Structures are given as structure tokens and as C-alpha cells.
Image 1 (cartoon, rainbow, N blue to C red):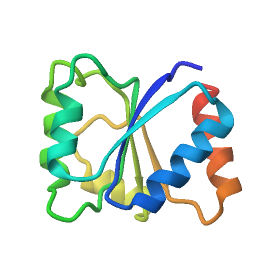
Image 2: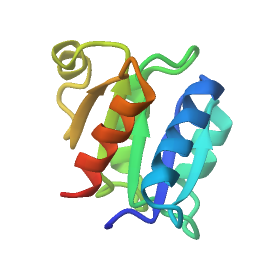
Image 3: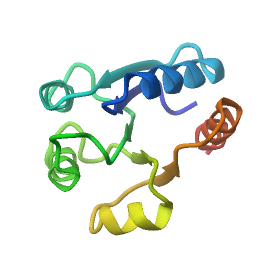
Length: 127
């Protein structure tokens, strides 16, 4: 597995916990850190000691402009090349429109079941 250090950016603590549980069910040695507010996100993006291998980012975080956040991620010397997976309740098409012109690795609509989430993650991690 290529991803050993994953950053989860989401304001919903339940979604973060489910995502961490699903990731760890596939690969228990993966370190998942989360950031759910502006201060935590900026700290995570500028921490050279814990550069993520992959970022999962929700588009719907209150008080955070997703375009500004994507620009921050892509302009940081530590995270500019880190793949981003947008993970949201929006459809893929809407996420693509909202994330223009940023290079996004993948768009995932939050699945309805835990098993669907695990299957999505297995697919991502097998590439």
C-alpha cells in the first residue's frame, strides 16, 4: 500500500471516525490524522514532520472556502504533490465543477453503507 500517512479533512467527526475505521480495516498500520477546523487544517498542511501521502477532503466544511483550501494545499511546499480525494455528499459531476481548476486524484460521493466505503477504499489502495 502506497499510503501510510493519510490526512482527513472533514468537519463531521462521525464521518472521520467511520473513514478511519474503514481504512484501518484494510491496512491497520496506516496513520490517519484528521483536521476539522481552519486552525487544525492549516497546522496539518504546514507540518513538515507529518506530510501526508494522501488527503481526503470534504467540500462542505462550514466557514471554509473549499477553493481557498485547495489553493492552500496545492501551494504548500509540503503538500503540493499530495493526491487529493474529494469525499463529499455531492455527486462526482458537482464536485468536478466545484473543484475546477485544481488537479484532484479522485471524486467520491460518500457511500450509504460501511461495506461500500470499504470496497471503495480497497479499490483506491490497490492502485
